Length: 222
Image (tube, rainbow, N blue to C red; front, top):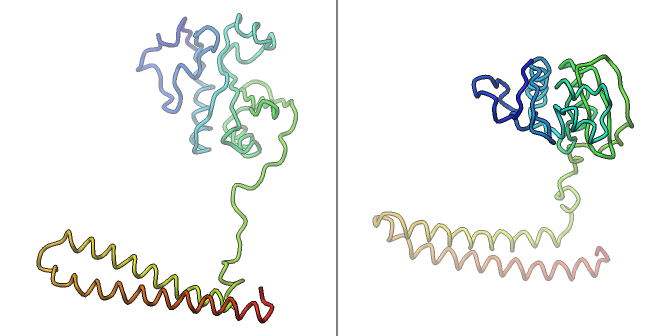
């Protein structure tokens, strides 16, 4: 275990936890730092297991800062074996399970402040449970086409959509060809003809769409 009056004094070759910096682990009130290698090894293991950043709200606390913030007299923060980790980017249940697997036996939950305390002390738990959180994955929904395939309006609208996209595609192709080698420049006039063809198809699709909407309305399908 090493102690530094200021975290800036930690030699670069003495710090071996790539996902954390001395400033993150140092006392927030004084800048002092007590390095507990075993606890930091477990914290690094937890970080690797979870695969995403751990936001450290509090790690080592100097005695004076611990008293100032109302910490317990025998707080594990005093010996650098405790960490308060924000749950802003973690599911508390999954986080706690991974923390226990990494060797953290002391678990304190603080849902109102949205963090979990973990330490390498004796096995114990305290605090309030976190409320259930929504799933990280969106509920699967059937494709819209399965609901709307029978609509004559949608079928007609597709013609207009295809025509419009086709016309836009020709414009993009025309621009690309204009920047290409001169050997393909003779093709440019044909692209103009194709563009007008697609525009005509789009206008025809719009007309069919209007007719289909009127037909749907008459059939009471709207």
